[in-house]
Length: 227
Image (tube, rainbow, N blue to C red; front, side, top):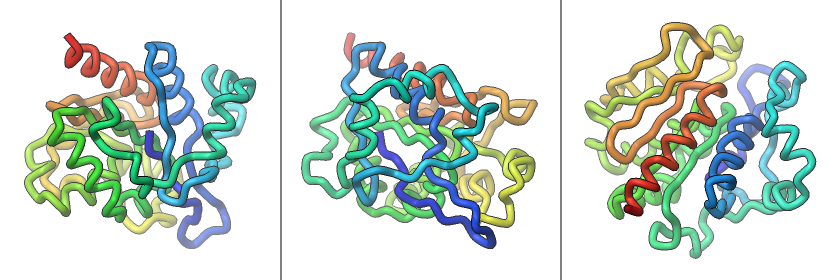
């Protein structure tokens, strides 16, 4: 699981980071299904948390579980650096990219992350992303220009970006950028409702409410490849 290390937003003193529920919901889905989860981030160590994701209205059951889980908290505080030589496609079954706005800065521009995604896909291993997490696929598509062309995908929409009141605090809108790279972009009829897309080995979830379902789709692919 690759987390963002970026917290700054444009034109504001507010900060972003990992949207906590988009980490905890998939983390426990995977853990409870019997998978071992390794956490990494571009800078290593403890990633920033988007303060809005810790507001009462955004707290999930997985968030509460995380707050009482010393092992998970320790793993979160000590993520591996993304350039760690041990982070290779042959040592893991799949990749998961949670969100927060941070990925549209650091992971979208990370050569290491983009290469890692391509290596996993080449090894026939799935890559799952949710909300702004699909921004990580931008660098992979820059390295392999045909990667997203015609791919059914979703992600945080332009409408949701406007409703979140952060359109003026980001360098570009994810939906627009994915379409520019050739993605066949789809979304739920209603903003902020769960929606996922699975196209081959690439799984994308639209928003925070899609985090758990995205992990379940990843588990389904992993189980299918194991039979």
